[in-house]
Length: 329
Image (cartoon, rainbow, N blue to C red; front, top):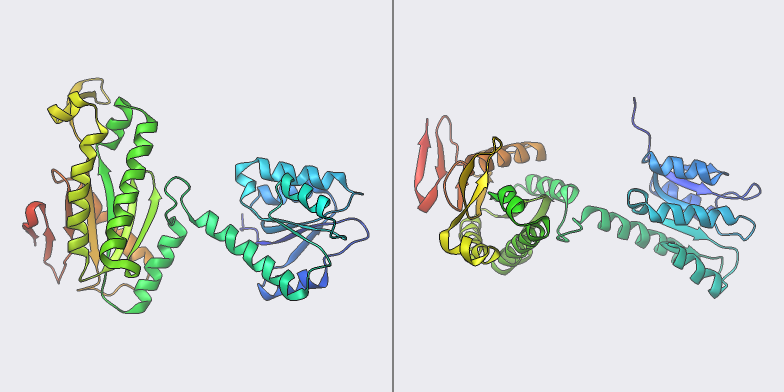
């Protein structure tokens, strides 16, 4: 089935059409406007992922429009789509009512054309920012991570992409609780953010793929110092997330998939590092695939460690525990 083209959805009365300003704004973004008279049709299109933004005529003659707004904003799946109410008057009480119902923006004829368009641009920017940020850590998500990869590839400068992943995190969740697991995820996000920001400033990037998977990007010259500091801070803080008995022992007993008891060590952090020192990337997917490969290799090594891909011809050099090198022909 072909993908539906993204568009602007407009819900108006039988005698209303989208305002000229809205038509011009949508055209400037190369977005077609789909007009629907029935609120149910608008909701269906949003549920199918069709609408980039929804515009609803805010008229007392159409109480179903307020019900539509409330339904859209009560469902987390549809709530991320920005909804603008277009009113015929600038009555403050009516505008407050729409905002309380969940509207992202309320516009009236009183707004000058420049402000009308600026408000629409700001609304869409807010929506795009909210979608691209991971809700639990407030770090950029997968869309922004891909954009960062593309930016680095196109910049033609030396860079390092680092894929960080927790070891023994599932067992920790099983022994403690998902609440404790979320706390560990948040702590790791702060460590990555604060170390990268503190050591490389605006030249660094930290993103959250999801779960316990993170990406951070630095210049080639900075990645070793950044990874070393991250691992040092992590190893100092992670034991504090266990109870005293587990912390003193350095492990706890957990069950494997067969129900057999085995020792589970305290969590460690594995980081796979990819650079463009000896290779030229042409697409973000290449960076992602190689970073995933290096992260998987790092997870086979004991303790908190970062491994670096330094392939040159048929030889591969990876930095292992304690800074040692493993050469694989």
